[in-house]
Length: 130
Image (cartoon, rainbow, N blue to C red; front, side, top):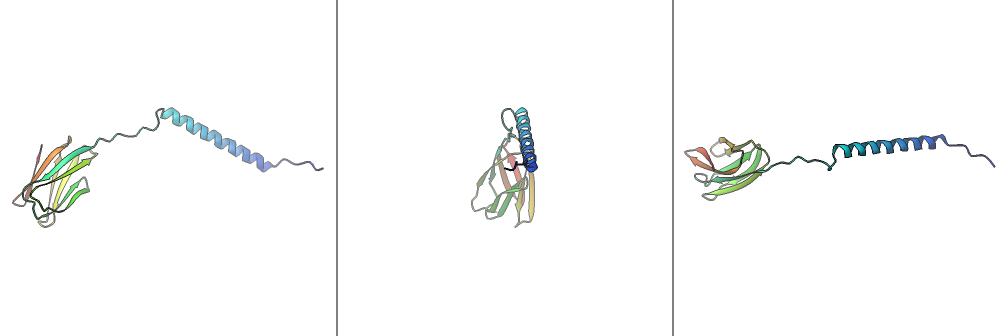
């Protein structure tokens, strides 16, 4: 009977496997050490705005944007219209785009949220915050 020789490749494979297990154990150890309660997600507070289009917008095509996000884009059919929007930022900018009049109006929204009323008088948009 012939004597079996030790396979050197098998020893290298077991060594690599042992190193991989050690690396995984170290990663798990540091993960548990840095995040004892699991992963910590950032809490984003949502600020809610009630944007009302009251006077002078009937029949106009209006686009409302908050921080480069379009929240409303269509023709206003009623005398008054309310759009409710929740945004995560504290400092928000409202842009009112009226393509028919080729006009853009921008307003800084209050950081605590609330009701915002937009009125259109003589092709000029005004804002009131409550």
